[in-house]
Length: 198
Image (cartoon, rainbow, N blue to C red; front, side, top):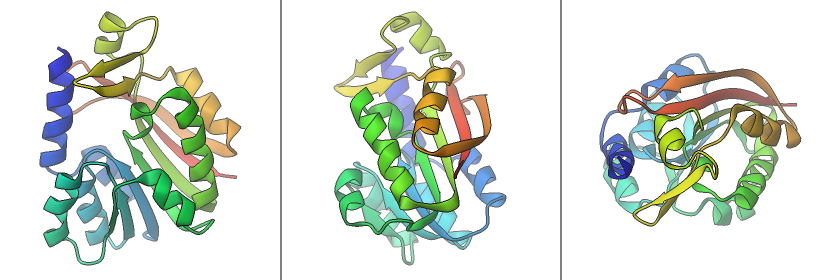
């Protein structure tokens, strides 16, 4: 089962754009977009085609290399925290966390959402997709500690209350929150939040 989680992540990076992100972008006015996390290659190209000016960050250089020929002007980066140090305050109309926050340990999650608040414009939209502790894998393999490592990669499973509290602490207002079934993992549950900066 653990290997299944990693296989899902690899498959997701190599396939079409994430349908939940595509749906979100369909109803979002194009502007400057920061896209962070797994699968950015396809999602970034999809966003660019929809008229967004995209900066995409992922630690997987192979995913970025694959997307570069398809992109016209996407600004690809490999280190979020290094990029954030040099990025201007209030730079982005829209930020998408596509599974990056659930790969961070607790103290870095706090810093991550603090930095996002700096980068997001007033009334900008933050879209978060993160693993939920309602996930069958989390319930079975790490019900008390809510985290696991698979092939050396760290994954955290947020509770609804915990994720909402972290987000509100950094000056956001939650517009909508739902738990969704992952399209490629039959038992996986992700939290999906649409948030605005106050």
